Image 1 (tube, rainbow, N blue to C red):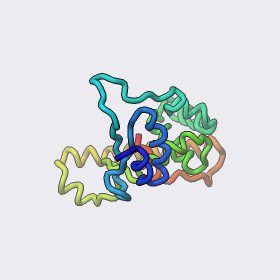
Image 2: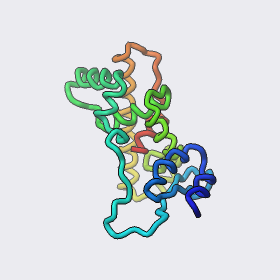
Image 3: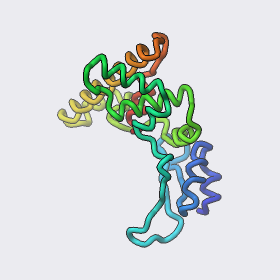
Length: 189
């Protein structure tokens, strides 16, 4: 398949990624159209071992410190949570998940919005709530099922902490932070 053919068969959100990877002779493909499984990247040329595949500019990388710089309310949330709990309770993952949900609800960074459009709408992970508990318990060894349960509890605690800190830091008790979107973002990280 040529790069142009691959781009034509992709849904609109992946066009950005296709354009971003094209200079590196890479093409984007869906596993199965509209399957929500995501995409894979394929090289269009022969490559030598250890050859650089692609390069990102530093400003294209999102990490917790940069998220705090881009959304002032996040800095207030982190400071509030630290003062309340006397310890840095919000992990980088929680900060990034909160950033992703806030960006989804109220975009402030066009490049990051384009990146977010490339993330599958459903990230398959232990946090995937669409898998019924009795099914997960039937197919997982007990120790894994318990680890999944602990992970669910951990993400819920991070969500509750982020939500409470966000409401207090912004003095807006009506502000929402949907648990399903926070879980999706946490899984995508």
